[in-house]
Length: 129
Image (cartoon, rainbow, N blue to C red; front, side, top):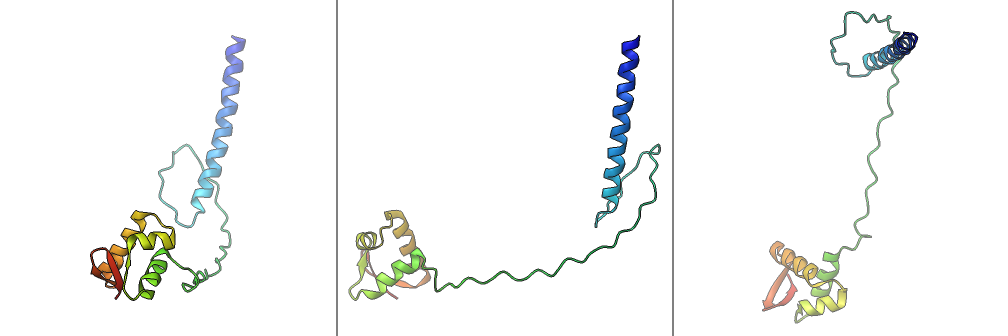
């Protein structure tokens, strides 16, 4: 019987601690900027909350623009090589000069040709557009 009484007292303490935590959470939730209506249990009583002064956040600055001239992309490298050549360049030559793998070079050449930046002068030979 004594063990049961100790267990019940321990449970009561736990419930009280949980009730305090719930009240703190409810207060924090009620003071949030976008309160949502929550059905509160009828047994729980809430003390009147004090209104806190809301500080206005400073205006966010626009992110710094990156200079695109400094960034040399893979497409830029390949287009530069193609436009320098008079007779045109094939894919193996582009692979050797840039060090890119076959698939990357083919994708860049296909996209550039589709956009009209380069033209095909023969089978597998590309010149500046």
